[in-house]
Image (cartoon, rainbow, N blue to C red):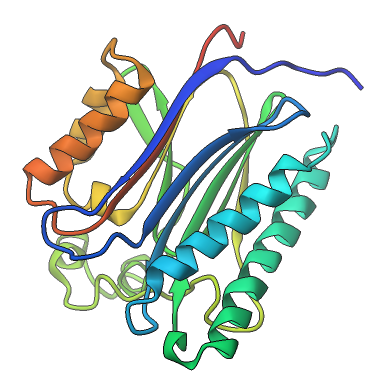
Amino acid sequence: MIRYELHGTYAFRTDRGRVRKDNEDRAIVLMNSAGEVLLAVADGMGGADKGDVASRIAIDVISALFKNKKAHLLSSSNRRWLKKAYKKANASVYSYAEKHPEAKGMGSTLVTALLSGKRLLVANVGDSRAYYVKGRKASQLTVDQTYVNFLLRSEKISAEEALTHPDRHVLMNAVGIYPSLSLDIYSYRYKGESILLCSDGLYNQLPLSSIEAIASTDERADQKVLGYVYEANGTGGSDNIAVAYWEAIGND
């Protein structure tokens, strides 16, 4: 197998924000022995304030499986691995809630970006997001699995109405809510773009132009991540904030 080495810098961070009393967001960036990179963000919810448990379990399961993952030459093999990993995370969150009645109804969003050679696979459940960032342009790679986005895509409401819709935070899908799980997986050719994953606590506070502006600076990856958190809090910090960021170096 020809191994394509990934070189880059990365950072991740979560923050409680300025309004919420607890932090239910989790984020991680990992590299494994197969030379792959995994970014993940989870935003917990429900279950009598046990959202932090749901997001922690989801991230812990994905992280443990990734550390022992073998390199796959085919994108289809990585797609199957992601499906199995998500199903394991879902089963673990659901099982915890079944054994702990006080956690009934807890769940979590989960978005991951798997960089393997010259391919990027993005998997998503919920409304946390993944972005490509190239130059001064950021492109969203995921589709929000929310009720309002369903209405928007069905042309039942306008983009302007979606911004203030009373049900804009209602999820159509989450890890751990049901025994089975459906997820979206997207495959892209990777050409050294920066990758940004975040919870809604970031993108609901910052316009896309601000997300692009911070990514396009000459700051280090950890400084950019701090910048995202600082700016989100500066515009209200109404929710927990999670950010995972990867910036390639010399991946030609």
